[in-house]
Length: 139
Image (cartoon, rainbow, N blue to C red; front, side):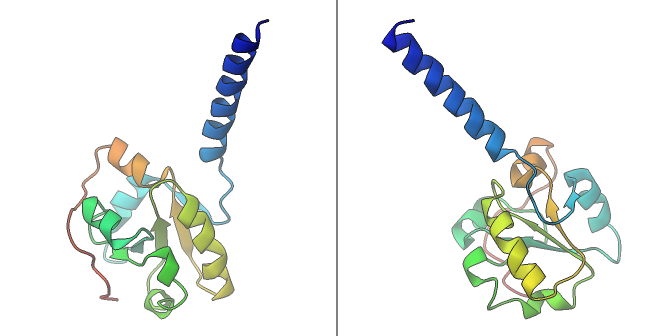
């Protein structure tokens, strides 16, 4: 095997490993599928959906009715989640969701879920989304 072929093989294995890690199900909270969330959003006892991304990202596309609580502000705004009838958190790729889970547990937020497949899965399934400014409060 030539050095060039070895480098190509190594790069391919590295990329494959990173892709697997990105989709690993190492969340602390139970998951909720996009279809299940959409169905629950139609009920009177719908959960509070929390988008953990920055306001600029939220403005590009977000789940209808989602509350924008950037992960950097979560601890300051934790009281906004207490009276909710369940909470579903999401971001674009799962990183901020994983970071938010211990914060929610530490503040005794119960009955919360992560969105399985993140916002990417929601959009891939062609579920409705909104664009525009952040809904910063309302619960």
